[in-house]
Length: 334
Ligand SMILES: NC(=O)c1ccc[n+]([C@@H]2O[C@H](COP(=O)([O-])OP(=O)(O)OC[C@H]3O[C@@H](n4cnc5c(N)ncnc54)[C@H](O)[C@@H]3O)[C@@H](O)[C@H]2O)c1
Image 1 (tube, rainbow, N blue to C red):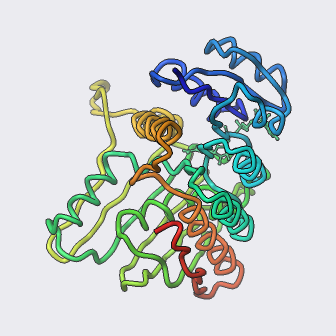
Image 2 (spheres, rainbow, N blue to C red):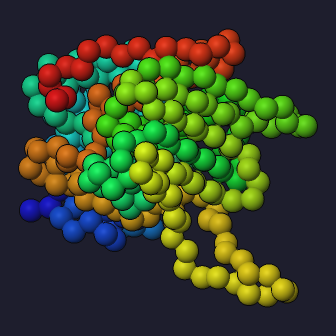
């Protein structure tokens, strides 16, 4: 008996998820590829052997031959489509962020609580990346003492389009850091400050954020979506008795013209290939057993990232430190 999965959104991420399901997820079948563009859905379905294609995501979620759903359409579709999955009793792996704002995340949590069972896994795949799991293990194991600071750099070659703004760098790109830092440190945020340097052109400038955690640690996050040179994520967790610095997997070093060089990836897919694979396996297990992964992010974690993002947008606009104020955590997510 295999789990029949529908992928909604067949762009960069949806095509990658379809490949993982088809090639690397024993126990799952690629049942439907759904995209607003029929042509795009067909191309991805043909490339990865999906049984069917569709353009209406709500109809796909309700199909009796679909057991679970992977949402990889744009950010603003995530919460409405997740709500449709919960209403149809379909386990759902939704790409990050759960929603650009916290109100929609609360709606998702309320629907899941009313359904009486966990159905949502959120695509914060860095929780499955070896760099962060080693940081967390070193901290939890007492190897570096109490955590003091966590440094984070997140750079993309270029932003997705001219519509991508500084506030979107906070609510979309930085949602990865908001989540994975909370996951590693095991604490929530208290405040956030955000700043942007001036660029010489009209491209979106980097956003620099500093957060204070509820436990008194400092976290800095640089999001640079027009870094030009490559996809580059770095980080270091600093404790009172040592630090853990992130390494990026490298498969070759080039020696030529008196230089010793390594290549950068063009984007995130190669850097986090193993994390996406492990995340999707955890989702398959969750969808089959009904038991959520202990590592994966929930709707509550999506809410926490959205609250940090909203406070970050306010801090960027005002130039002042903003409080990160969350509702009490529902027992359902404990
Ligand atoms: N986890 C990660 O590392 C990671 C990386 C990149 C993007 N993302 C997230 O994945 C999502 C998709 O990003 P992408 O880069 O693949 O975008 P994309 O623009 O390449 O693809 C989005 C696709 O969704 C389709 N679409 C739009 N509205 C739709 C709808 N209502 N129903 C069905 N299909 C619809 C579009 O036609 C397009 O093919 C975004 O929310 C983004 O934040 C996550």
